[in-house]
Amino acid sequence: MHAAPDTALFHRLRAVRPGALIANPVLTELTTEALAAGIDRVLGAGAGPAALGRPFIANPDPVERLRLGAPLNPVRERCFVYVGGTAGYADHPALGRGTAQPSSESIVAWDGPRVA
Image (cartoon, rainbow, N blue to C red; front, side, top):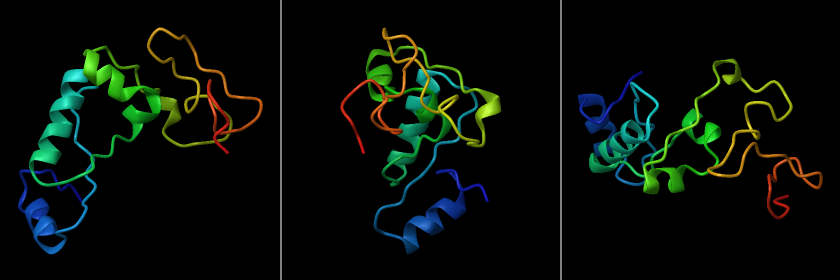
């Protein structure tokens, strides 16, 4: 069911759930501008936090990209469902760093300290 911020359903959900409401902005294009506008739209309607889904997976540095207005990595259509391995989940390039390589110490760490 679609509950965009300008729908009656969204406002009913907001009324019955006054606490945290996580909303995923509906994007018609995958650009920094569209992502920022979508986040602003859901936060402005009273949701918070905003979930980014596939744009977050494809961009290991979304906050930096939004701050700089940098282009987003494309979402790989074949990666809609996780089927094991890092392809499509941990190999998207960060700004100025090239393709990320998974850490040999952890299956969830990328190019930094061990996460788990």
